Image 1 (tube, one colour):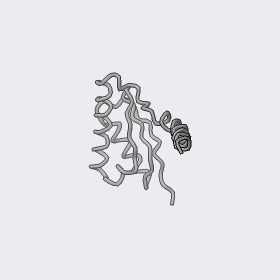
Image 2 (cartoon, rainbow, N blue to C red; image 1 turned 135 degrees about the horizontal axis):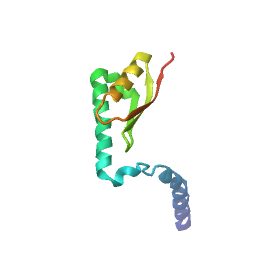
Image 3 (cartoon, one colour; image 1 turned 90 degrees about the horizontal axis):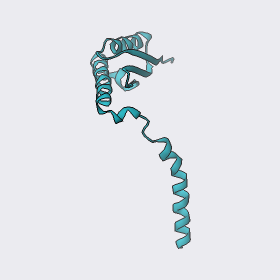
Image 4 (tube, helix red, strand yellow; image 1 turned 90 degrees about the vertical axis):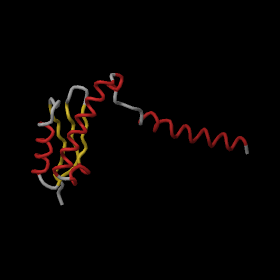
Length: 108
C-alpha cells in the first residue's frame, strides 16, 4: 500500500513538472519595479479606453506592454474598423512607443 501511494505521487509529480516549468513567469522586467509599474499603467490606460469606447471589444482584445513601451495587441473583432480603432486608441496613449497588432477580423 505504501509503495503504491509513493509510486502514484511520483507519477503525478513527474507529470506536473513540465506544466510548472512552462507556467513560470516570463516577465523578466519585474526586477525593475518602476518599469513594471509603468508597463502596467500603459496597459491599464489602453484597456480603460477600449472599455469606454466599446465594452465588448475589451473581452476579445488582449493588450500587453513591454519594458520599452511597445504595445502588443491580439484577439478578434467583428469589423476591420474595430481593429483600426483599437490600434488608434493604443497609439494615442501616453507612453506608447509602438503598437504591434495581431488583431484579426472574425469571419462568420
